[in-house]
Image: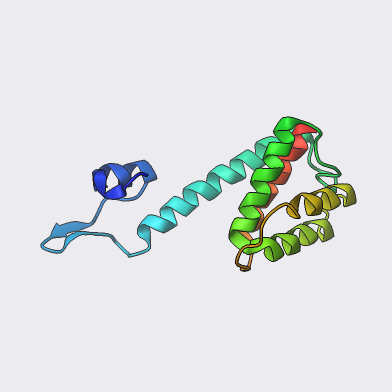
Length: 152
């Protein structure tokens, strides 16, 4: 297992795209604000996701709904579906994942066939703590939908 304390803090900050500390003193490195590192890292991830979604949308002409009428019938597609469901269960538990899939059906990201297939795959997952799936998780899910649509 990797231990972040085994690495140079400056190198870790540079790799994550965080700003350099504003000053060093007897208390050690200090950031402009306590959330500086997390805000910048999240912005980089969000920017990369938006770029991916635009590229994938252009490749699949993602202008008509549902974006994903059915799941792709391939090994890569199945792997991507399972990764997506693992993500949803990880952030929202089985109930939160079930609710998210139903929501994606209502907003027509998913067709009825895709929604039913995802619900069937979800039955194979063990239950986890139920939490709320938030807007950032929905953005990530849309990226999964776009990638799956590109495989069809």
